[in-house]
Length: 234
Image 1: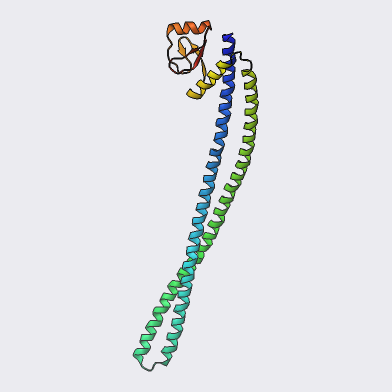
Image 2: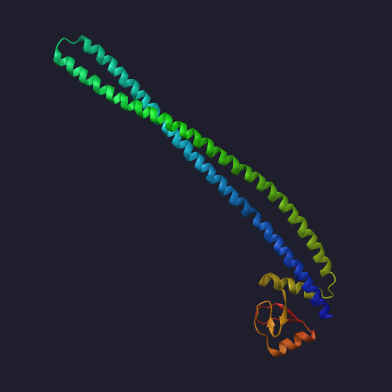
C-alpha cells in the first residue's frame, strides 16, 4: 500500500538525515585543525619576531664593540703622539682629542652594557616564546590524534546507519518511488518527502490547495508539492 511505502520512506529519510549530520561532523574536522594550525603559526611568528629582534640587537652590539675597540686604539695612539710633541699647543690639541675619544668610548660602553642587559631580557623572551610554540605544537598533535579517532568513529557510525537505511529501503514495494525520492532530495536538498500539517507542506511551509490536502489523506496516488517538489504524505 502507498501509505505503508510513504511511512517506510519517512524512516529512510530519517536515516539519510542522520547520515547528512554525520557527514557535516566529518566536514567540521578540518576546520578544527585549521584553528589550531593558525594558533601554532601565530606562536611561531611571534617567536620568530623575538628571535629577529634578539639577532638585530646582537649585531648592533658587535658593531659597537668593534667601534669601542677602535676608539681605545685611537686613544692609545694619541697618547703616544702626545708624549712626542714639543710645543704646548700641539699637546693641548692632542689632549682635547683624547678626551673627546674617551667621552665617545664611555657612551659606547654604556650602550654596550645596556645591550647586554637587554640581551638577557631577550633570552627570557625567547625561552617563553619557545615554550608557547611547544604548547601549541602539543595541542595540534593531540587534536590531530583526536580528529583521526573522531573520523574513524564517524565512518563507523555512518556505515551502521547506511546499512539500516538500505535494509529499510529494501522493504519498499515501489522502487520507482524510492528513485523519485532520491531525485527530489538531490534537487532540493535535505528532505525529499514531507508531511503535511493542516494544509501546509512541512518542507517549504507553503499552503496547499484544499483538494490536494484531501487527496493526500486518501493515499491513492503519489502527490508532489507544487512549490518545492517534495513528495507529500499525511
